[in-house]
Length: 274
Image 1 (cartoon, rainbow, N blue to C red):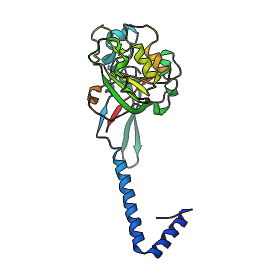
Image 2: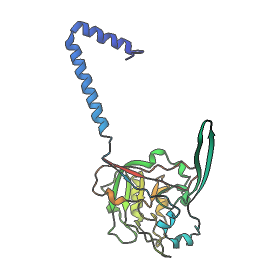
Image 3: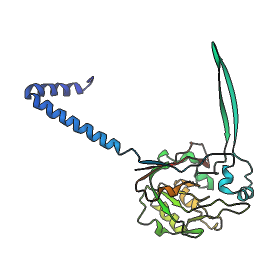
Image 4: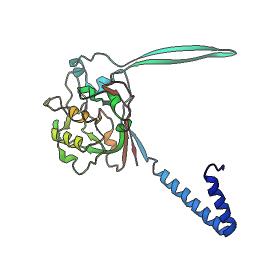
């Protein structure tokens, strides 16, 4: 091992001590080094998750319809599906077969499927690029509210005493996509619960529901505005939240593409279980 800079003096001191005090000094140094290495290994092992749970969805042409239902997409005049424009290419290689491959342009509906909202989505600030990258990951807490009725029915008491500042709150509502021309039925936060989480503040809020907003209650302030105006990302249409129930230590990561002035972006969020 090369020794540079001020470490040269330290190396000389060790050598001098070894000559002065004999092998016992080296033995003690070796034992200390072994303890340091063992401690480092022990610390490193705590970062290995026991399980990684995918909260994302397979991206297909009809992904928006799978979450929104056809009726509400039509009502909002969102008529286009996801699409892929595949561009194939080939390069000749001297003395061998040609090399073939492809690139593609993707056209994606950015709020159809698991995604994160930017403040500008509801006129509550700038785009998704205004978030600090650490806004998209952190310790997660999951809350099962499947027994509550649709609408703004999730009270503050569900979270009080169970959420700390900086937590990412994930809410399992049991959302089912509507069939036919029916509109999405959503269970979401009361005004008071949204304000409580925003005031703590939490790092982000996510739900399996179509939206964190109840379509049957448009009274102000919207939940989106309460959270996004404070720079708190909102995740919607998350999958498999039920797989997190009963697990104690959860770390969520839902980092999107950094789209300038973007009102939202699809993500493939994952949770590391420890």
